[in-house]
Image (tube, rainbow, N blue to C red; front, top):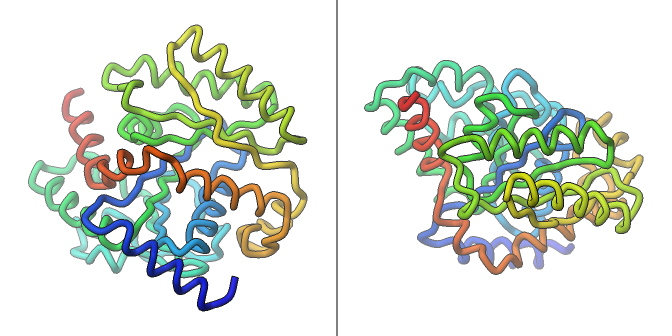
Length: 294
């Protein structure tokens, strides 16, 4: 893509999101090692190539996958806004292609006992992100921990990454089962999209989706959508070793092309206006509200 076209894309994207919350994509998985964080960073790269301002919020506490994949190490995390009087801009680390990145770090643990006043203060700061970015990607931890559940059930658009491995499929179901059991999860207002990763082609990806969708629909009553697939590609692991997303290292790799297709498909989603109505600040307000009800 030439510089002139890239500039036109950026201007166009910035005009689209005036007076609207940033679109929030929550990416999760039932188990680790299925490519969740890789999906987060590569989608961020593809959105950026299309001219959108992108932020990744790393909610995978205890691990630093995003940091490793970007080769950047943040100085501050979310708790520094409340306890160390840092501006929201100061806790944003810039990765490749000027992609924003906020580390959750141990910040959420520190935030768990905030007063209502501090919650409102933090929410007011987080609201600034809606004017700074067009798309915010939340990379949750893997599994069914309380923190993962809080982020997923408070989100309106969720991408679940899975692979054809039996353990991955089992954990995928366990994740949705735990979600369904949550009293404040609204399946009607939440779109859950399945991303089949590390597959050997379209047929295997469709079989994987149909398998999980039939079971989830029958026993949990949750409707799933098929987002797409990422093929097995050795370029992905090679890129990770270089601490860079494959979409940057080799934009012609099969995986890069697949991420590009998925990113464009998400942007063409007819319901995009709906997703923009719930911002990152509202997600955190919902999470803190849920904690106080326990």
